[in-house]
Image 1 (cartoon, rainbow, N blue to C red):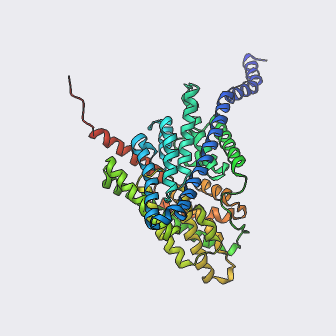
Image 2 (image 1 turned 90 degrees about the vertical axis):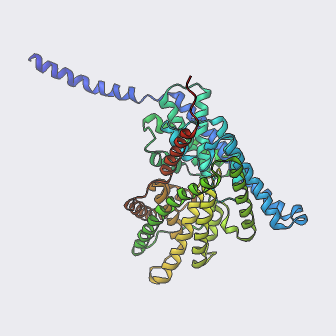
Image 3 (image 1 turned 180 degrees about the vertical axis):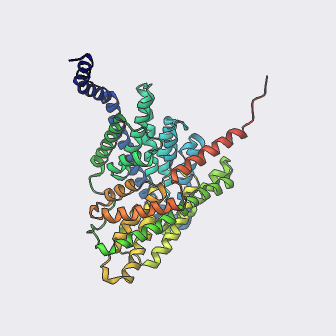
Length: 467
């Protein structure tokens, strides 16, 4: 046997062992990272769950005040205006005074932090988002609690790395993402959606590795366990359970997706336009900011009495819609009205998310579409509630540009697993048409806007005199 043949045999004999060793060495997950992700998930679950309880407490207390002693001494409309204005004032004041980065959803701030472009001042963000969100959401604003819980979850991830003095940048990044996943899992009782939100929606920022994905999974699962231990294991939205639609009716779901693709692009532009309008109104001056926010809160306190369907995040409205509580014409009017109230609230910079308002809008238009389709095609045996659920996922997919997350989120929130095929068709149609129209994901637009405004503020600051 020649030397060349012996060398070849030697290499072949050692290759499997070296390959296995290399794989095992690259797959060693530090237990400390997994342990810290567990801590992050538990804390994110506690904060997210008790944030929901606190918001409900404030909302119920506000309603009781309106019905009892105060309402008997002061006119009801004036009481509603004052209470909602005061609650809104608390949210706006805390944000502007202590943590401007806590304004709005907060998800773009976490994405910017994952890219190293935004700071995470967790010691300010967590209390401001918690108590400011209590005031803003408790006043009846058209805002969701998912954005605040995601931002607070990410801030908890950074808090844990600071407490344990973590220096490794990848570990800090993984725990920041883990906190965001835990926050969403706790907000909607949706662990799969929490995991996929980080992997899919935050894909430009998320550093995918075996360690990071395991940390995200552990955090989302532990946060969801905490949520279920405190709030129970029922789905967040109680609604009918539907069977799969007939095959000949599937093209209607694609048509609905196309409509939502067009609307999703328009919706994202309206969001940024409303933010620009409010920026021009208050000009970042604290007095103007607080007066504007308080007046908005007070006005919508009046809507709580006379048109409550136009207020609140909208999650509580979804079961009424899917149970046939409204006709198609009223649903379309309510759809247009909630677009306006969503733009006013979210554009004003109040500390709250836009997930829940989007889900409510998708339900409104989807159910109206289903009612109209049922009248036009009676032979297809159409159930309008199916289109309501498909609409929830479609609007999320068109605006956030994360169809898999939207599908999982809707399925976990409604427990309607048989509708996975129409959800996929509708969400896919929405995403494709939104891309064809040149639309950009909402959180990417908001992050770019934040960075642009920050740069302009820095340029406007007076330069230091030269010595």
